[in-house]
Image (tube, rainbow, N blue to C red; front, side, top):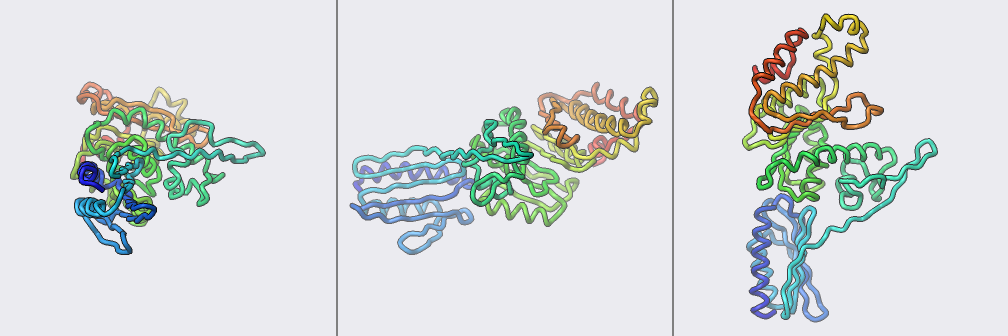
Length: 390
């Protein structure tokens, strides 16, 4: 290739170098095809701990991105042209160079639409009954890793409901995620992460669909589930995730936390996560509470004595009071709170999602109302105790 083309190629390679430095965690692969007449010579580069393992001419060398670009530029002098495909999670860049011209453009990651059906009670329902956020085709690797999709690329019949649930989860968060800072890496903390399926889904959506820079931290007291999550992240190539086997009460972040998530944390574990979110001044707190045992054994309210003698009604009232008082206390700390249905109540009565967005200063008057309410109910909520005794 002539000097003019190589000079322009070097400018594009500098752009790739800057991109790798900024987006290292989502880099996947770089492939280079050098051409001379009808002959082509291919090199493939894959990520290796801040560097790239580049296989070319039968040898694999570990190079930093700058040295790789020097190699590409020197090799280009020997050939008539080249084609580079630089792959990141959710986006590909194509550079083509010859003696006549040098061009660079973004390549769309193709979406493959697959219409699958599932039979239940002799009725057929089609997967394509909604515009999915987590799309079959683009998200196949993720869906296979979390067990929604079979190895041959079909959504499993017994996982259709789960697939719809995780997609609806993303839909509910979509309306609030845009309120997060646009020019920062979004740090997301998953409290009691378990196997982190929904966090992996959110990672995919933010990184590969919304093109947002993000970093995930999963906390769980079980070392086994942490090892399982680490393995899944490794399989998917999700390097923007860390997992820690630790009690939530013992975790102190070393960076700004933008989002705190708690999904199906049992009883007061939800309160622990909410308290952590408030303590670190998280911009957004998302909680899907599970069982509610604490308040049921505590509260009483004389005007409702004739109603609360029925055990089922007292339990349901305890659920409402627990999440209502959680929301009330969040509001007193300056959060704008909404309580929405996460999934259909036909699937589980524990179907609420609490979404809290930090929008204003603390509200002392509301805090006093909260304190009056717990006194009137003879309640001693863990969320209040965690916030004041942590």
